[in-house]
Amino acid sequence: MNKRLKKLQEAIGKAKLKGLLLKVNESGQSTQPNNQNVLYLSSFGGSTAVLLVTVTGAYIVADARYWTRAKLEAKDFELIKVERGKKVSHFINRALSEAGITQKMKVGFESHRLTHQVFEEWQKDLRAVLVPTTGMVEQLRQYKEPGEIKELRAACKATSKVYQEVVALMKPGMTENEVAFEIDSRLRKHGAVDNSFSSIVASGPNSAIPHHATGERKLKAGEPVVMDFGGVFSGGYCSDITRTVFVPGKSPTAKMKEIYNIVLAANQAARKALKPGILYRDYDKVARDYIQERGYGQYFTHGLGHSLGLEAHDPFDYEKAPLAVGAVFTDEPGIYLDGIGGVRIEDDLVVTADGAERLTTAPYWKF
Image: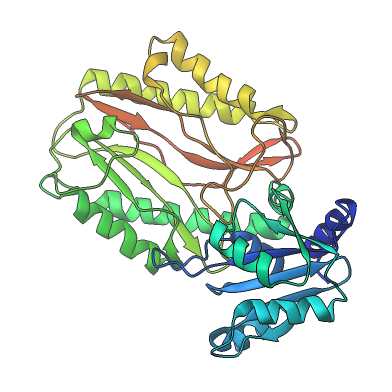
């Protein structure tokens, strides 16, 4: 049985529960399931299933579309087959019965991931007392294992290649959407199975909007273009990179060169400060103070970074948990001047025993 599953089983026992139910639902928005905890625990990457993890066993409840995948991917889980035309709750009850769970026994469910409608159905149908839980699996996902870091390193390397290919194509007259198309198609070319999020291409004054909605605006010579994108690769792990570039044909303004250099220096200062044991607020403060001291503090309007893993924004306790060895975080300071333009530079970093390793290898802009 895998180590992740054993750790969760220990947590279930400490919580005085007999088991934990996890559900993943189909989503039309992406090829990714909407509960990565299922993938993390079982390696099952399908879009609909229910896991039951007990203190001594593990079950996966899936319909006919996923029986073969469940057997191949979720090898530590006993497969409970959902038959067509019958309610899924009937087969969850079968798993509960096989696990020896009776009517009065307590079973947890992920309250932050289950809809109220499904909860009401389960409460009515299942042969257990349902107890809400929060963050039992997310706590395990905060720090990455060596195998996970290997997956993230490969994802970031491939995404950095995409950047270098796309920036070489960029020219005046291209639209933001055309640049985004080049990004997305090259992500697939280099092994991505999906986007981590919708690619952002923000040109000219749009670059002052941190999460601009990519559109039909045409690029003009000399202006900044913020490109923020990432891919989900075959192991399920995400990349997330931002680079600010300048459209060829004209030199950028002195102001844009100034803020670019400040943002880059803030990015590098934060990376240098990232060591085992630092808290997120102190990591953030390094870049924020650097930008503040140069007169642009009010124009850095978002957090320095976020945890990265099976999701572009992976779970992490930003208030209390230290950025210890195995934490993977983005480093993305920015300065945004409304109506003029903005700069953001983002790298993906992993905390090591003696500092931090930069996983994204894409070069920075040179004037």
